[in-house]
Image (tube, rainbow, N blue to C red; front, side, top):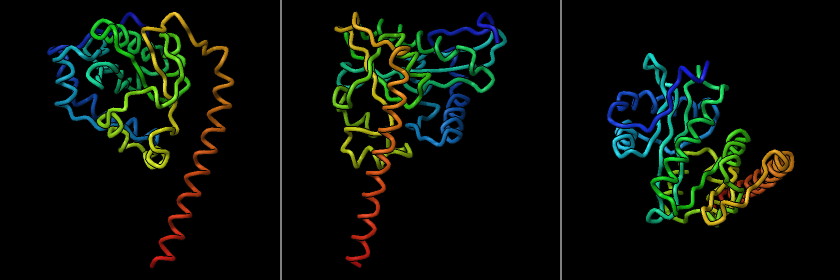
Length: 224
């Protein structure tokens, strides 16, 4: 695919016909990866487009190629660029990066003082976020709005998040703080260290969760 045949624009009423396709692909992609996402209806996606809080990618012939939208939390103090999805035939060609850049620019325009954050397990997404100025942070630096964390309930790792009292999970938290935008975390130099950290983190969390599960089973047997 050549970049010239795909447009990435701020979505509006003209693009609402893509809403159901986007929802279906989000669900299919989550199942293929074995992960969960906050489920969204086509009406929800449509409203984001009508509010000017989404970007969509499509070809000159009108074929849908990608999508991402803006969520706001804590009275607009925190912003999340959510629901990033690229159609299978347009993956691995840099389109996700273009969409992330466009939605980031839109977020900065609409909410210039807000902190922009995200949760991810993917190194590719981390690299893109790093290029935009995000840095890895602890979960305590994210919004504590219950509505945001409720969206994690559909994820296969939700029990781990709950057992850790929302202080840790398999995802890495990343944050763009406009007050500290001059500081920049170098992903290229730190990626190997991050990979080792993630392997250790996953090992410890799975070990902890497995231990907790065994305790629950024993407790259930003893109290039967």
